[in-house]
Image (cartoon, rainbow, N blue to C red; front, side):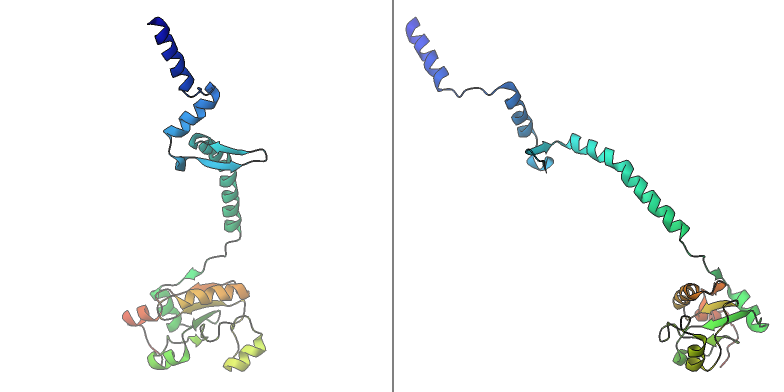
Length: 203
């Protein structure tokens, strides 16, 4: 009976697969306990290395300060190169200018000519359409005079732009600054606010 049990035990051990070494079995057990999607393969010169989420997080934390420094540096450069903002004019300021014109301040209506024909304009304003003549502040003085039949506002004058609803006047102010005008203003309320508040209209 004892010899039969010993023989059965030997046969059982012989048919069982050989156990893996501890170091080889441990990674397999870890891999089995995690979904494959939580692991990333990084190619190296020698072989492919599996990086666990903890190692990935560690590498990200090492790279983060460099990224933050680069973003901060770009933000600093953007602030230094930012353009000087336009002076904002409200209804009362524009009304006083229309009632008592100042030779050093030019009020510019940047709507299209047909819009002025339909609605009129703020008294004393000159028309320089920003949509159909966007290069008006970049061409020469002679070209401007040939195009509009009048002199262009001088570069040392303050130019105040308005349109219908405040969108085109902002674009015109940016173009004027880019062309060399330093005293630039905007009337954000523009024509809609002017009419709503009962501003005088010049036909």
